[in-house]
Length: 619
Image 1: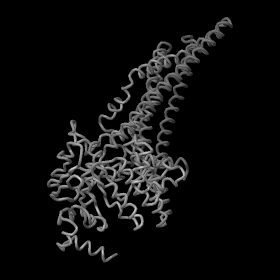
Image 2 (image 1 turned 180 degrees about the horizontal axis):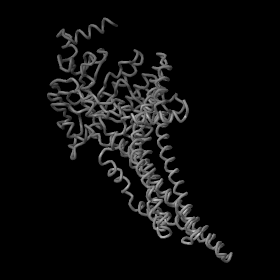
Image 3 (image 1 turned 135 degrees about the vertical axis):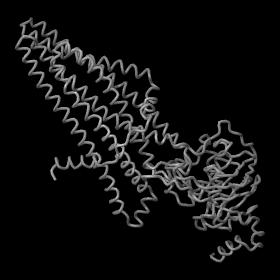
Image 4 (image 1 turned 180 degrees about the vertical axis):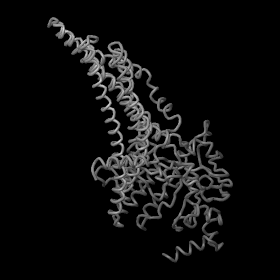
């Protein structure tokens, strides 16, 4: 297939694309609101750009004067002065251009900072349900690729528009006063510039939107597969070739959209260049005729020829700017799409304070079902065409129980019974569907999230750690803790000896998700992190479920330290670990079917006795 044929095939692919959607209403107004925060810098930049644009017209006029001086046989000094004046104008024009670019770059970078921090802060407010659905790579793409795409509108397109409008206006005035006939012929070719700009701009905006989606999908695959657990899974199942094929297909789709964008841009620019050449021919033809007949000076012909570039260059720039602006606005649109997704869990305007001291947790007729995808996510972040709007089945039904200060209450039951959901509700990772959960009499929905998390700590089965130092992982939310205190708490967590043997001690980097540590070490580090936070209530969500007996014993000693004098909600996989709990709740299908102490439940010979006997026989 020839390159020409391939180009038109690409155009055909564009023509069939459904990605020619209009921008969301209000996108331009909202984009402007971010730029308008820096009005002073914007005004300076516009003034400098306008002055630079005016100077671009001065050089052609002076060049015409030089030609006239030569034809008239003027003194050499006149020509030299004109030449020096042209050089001075060029230097001033260059200086103004540098200042203009500096102002636009500063404005663009400030706006990028505002956009990026706004998206990051907003995403952090989203509920856990959002993160369980959204692709990490897609979110990273919004913070990187789309924010940088939005910068184009500020740092490159906006300067072009301002300078070109001023240049175009001044050029038209000078051309009309020099030769209205030539100017009229030049303007007759304007429709060739204007009509393609609209349709091609829309096409390229659609392609840019699709390209951004494909880039996000490709980035998401890399983010997930390049993580330690992802890479391990791929290797264990020999999926390297399959993953390579998927990545190649996604990368090829990005390449294809890039080709299509280039072809359309090239076709458009070729048309503009052709029209500009035709106009230049008209200048020399009409201008030459007028010069020979004496109605126009030879210098004026040169001036008109040079001014023509000042006429069509701004027109080309404005037409191209529309294409660039549409592409940049697509980036703004994708950013605003995330910012418009409302967090389901928010702090009240005037939160109630949870009284200090021991923590009393009470469930009052609590029902819960997980939110629908349309309530917490975006189709573009999940790589699906349409979000699943179906509501989930109810998970919890009318739960009523109380954990008194200092008590340990354990939850047991089958997998999927709703135990981890209960733990998530106490930490207010989700809000109840009906009923209420109170801490010291304060409904969680009436308290601030900081107050809740300062009073309630949690250790999960997957003790997640950041790719940072041991110190940074231990002091999350409590950066003021001293090293002396950290070593004491590591001792309580039965981890001090292990950290001391590490090459950099507290400064040792634990690796992504803590994969440089063993499972038991990660779990004890998570417990130490809990001790640093020193909450009054503790939630343990199967904290020892995935450990061997040796590590379990070490972790259990650390847990005993963590639970001392604290209210505790413990989700247990191994029932031997909760025989001393003050109360045990048996959860099945979202209902509490049994409650009591270990001995009472064994005597009842119900579901708990069945679970306990089964585990005992297995061991």
